[in-house]
Every structure is written in C-alpha cells, then in structure tokens.
Image (cartoon, rainbow over all chains, first blue to last red; front, side, top):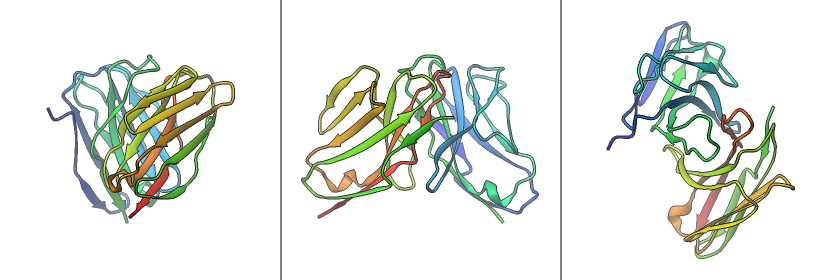
Length: 115
Length: 109
C-alpha cells in the first residue's frame, strides 16, 4: 500500500521557470490538499480539492495553480517560480472534506529551492 | 483568520513526561488534531479530540477544553524516538485544517 506519493523528492529551480509537483494517492480519497511548510510558520494550505473536478483556494494560493482531473492525481504548478516559493511542499488526502474527524494523510514531501 | 499558538521548543530527559500546550482562536470549532513529524518526514496522525476531556492512547494522551480554547498533548515515558515536531491543528467552520507552527521536542539521554 503506497498511500500518497510525491515527485520529485527535491528540486533546485531557476527563478522564472515553470514547475509541476506531482501527487498521487491510491486510497480513493475524495479530498486532496497542497500545503507548504516554512520554518516558524507551520503548514499553510495552498489549494485544495473536495472531489474530482473541483478545486478551491487556500490561505496562500498566489503563484500556484492546481487541477483535479481524476480521483488519484492532484498536481501543483508554479507558473513562474520566485525565490519566496522555496519551501517544503506536502500533498495530503482525506476521505471526507466536510467531516471534522476526517484524518488527513500526508505524502513524503517535495523540497523545492528557487534560486 | 485563525490563531493557533504552541511553544517553539521543549527539551526533556528520556523516561520523563512532557506536556505540549496549544491555545487557539478560530472561526468555529469542529475538532483538534495532533500530528507528529520527524525531521525530513511527513506529519503522521496522533490524536483527535472534539469533546472536552482526556483521551489516552498508550504513552500519549491528549486533552481538550473547548471553553478555554486549549489543548495539550502529554508524552509519558519519553523515548529517544519521540524527538520530533508536534503539530496542533484545529478544524474551523470551513473544515480546512489550520496548523500551529509546531513544537520541536528534543529527548536527551
């Protein structure tokens, strides 16, 4: 059972370049999420998807876009990377997006450095 | 916005007890999670509280007081492998988890 996989594990990127972080889950969860984690700030929600075909903006969506063409995949795209997007990015999934007790399961993360 | 506060760092000795406090002010409340995150790894689920009181799960316990906007995670019989960050996360009205910055616990021999 893989759970959630993310690719790449790490990446160094030149500013201005386009980059897509990949996320795939095999738990048939309805909801998926993208977070960034920065020292001293904790996990902040970038975008989410409550179900395939729908997406929504989180706390820090600017500079990022997502799509949810099917249940399993939820890619995050940086159209033109900037140094402030240097961070560790975590993808997560959960079964039900509107139930308080619903546990989110996290992928291993992608460490992105923008120079 | 949501406001969730927890201490930045704590240090304790192997075999001891450590209590990590979390206070919150959020738009609504649908529960509180504690996650554990080892360095360089993903957060993993520890506990969920939605009713007031203490939930015990082996060496780890979590307490909630909704009227005070307060929770704590209690780690007993500390082991070296418990060295990690512990994340407090609240479920507000929109059901989107709001995380505190995390508390890094260092266990010394």
